[in-house]
Length: 220
Image (cartoon, rainbow, N blue to C red; front, side, top):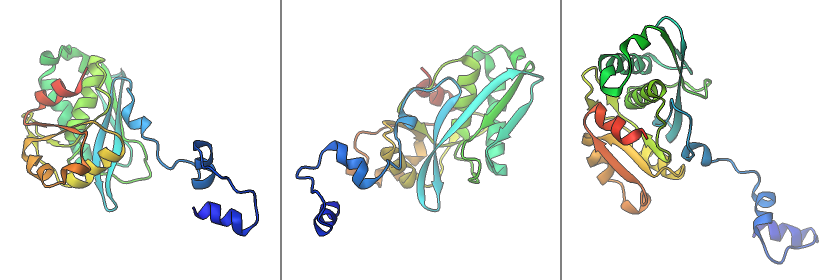
């Protein structure tokens, strides 16, 4: 309406009917692209949920493996707690390698690189624990992560999944991005129940307690 009013005020040719072709000209280029969060990705790439001072956000965790001597590289401007989550996730995976069909000697012959894009943005906290584990398992087993899926939760060396904060903000960020399935700790169910259901319609929540539940729900 403002665009049309401007055209009239400047005595320009006025579009009588606004069509899809006019939208980009009037509103500008799209600021967000949900497709990158919802489409399928190669093994080792997982969508995580983060809390920021401006609300919830979506982030990728990418893992690649190559021939090496068992080292672990972490990049993406990660804080100490987030680095510890990656180390914990890798230690858990090593201890339970046989359960997931991974040869134990593979860890000694492989260099692991975990990267969280947007390196200019500092990232920290334990919330990416299960996301790190899923990314690592996906990379080692070559099993893709299901599309339209995101997750958030802390992990322990015993494989327990612990609750995290910022659930409302994270969930709304997932909704904006077109995510349809979210994996959370069972103890976070009460936080989801506090969100008005019309805000999160269309999202299926998977509340879990153990790491193996995360992987069975996340990997194809």
